[in-house]
Length: 158
Image (cartoon, rainbow, N blue to C red; front, side):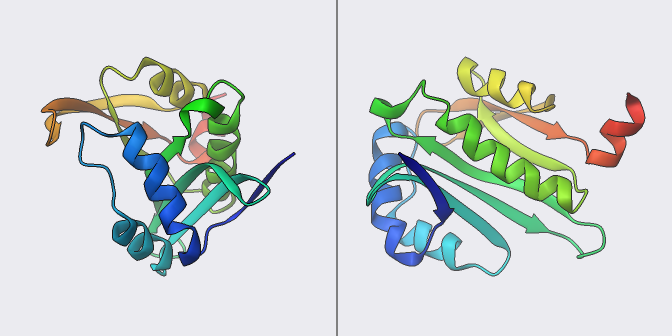
């Protein structure tokens, strides 16, 4: 049974191990990078677990003033053997719920060739706002910058 919980510093090695497989050609985050982000006061990192085994992870930064925040998806990844089971969607749902509670817009970058991730983000109300050329340093791949308007703006449009 899959359980979701907030990550602790002790989860950094498992997250880095998944990251190394998923982003091998694009400078994956190290264990130290995960420790830094998980321990930061402005981030929310969560994971999907089967017992002690991490299946996936996601990280959201809370930026700006408390009464008018904005959010940035720092990372999201699901172990290759676990993909296609809805774990990425469940992790995104948790992060977007947090953003909606505080009524802030959300931003992210995604490789232009990652059709599955782009489709997932679009399902959550993101749209492409621009392109960052050579965003992924190791491969030189471009990234789309995607934006999800705050809940009050999405609700007003309906």
